[in-house]
Image (tube, rainbow, N blue to C red; front, top):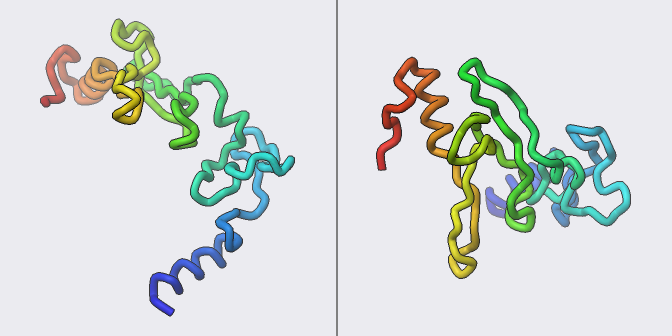
Length: 145
């Protein structure tokens, strides 16, 4: 038996994962509901897609996680493509931003032949937040391409 195989077996044994990659019953870290209780949501407990959230909490609308002294807020958004990646996406945002309108991201409109659209951090919000944390002028260009 190779070292890699032995390591994988030990990891599976200690996590309680079965041979199919399913984790033992757990509760949602946000609402406390048992995950995959009805048997119809296996991705909630599958090791490759496990986020600690049930489908309902994973899909909740955007909400503010934290507000910073700079006036920025950390906003949690549902995944833009849960079939690709299930975890919620976090962005820094300012309510008065003309670019993103307080969401913290803009959609990159890449064509579906190239993988489809995806969210990109709002550069104005990120630069403004970093500048405020650094004591710099928010209009200065912090990021160069």
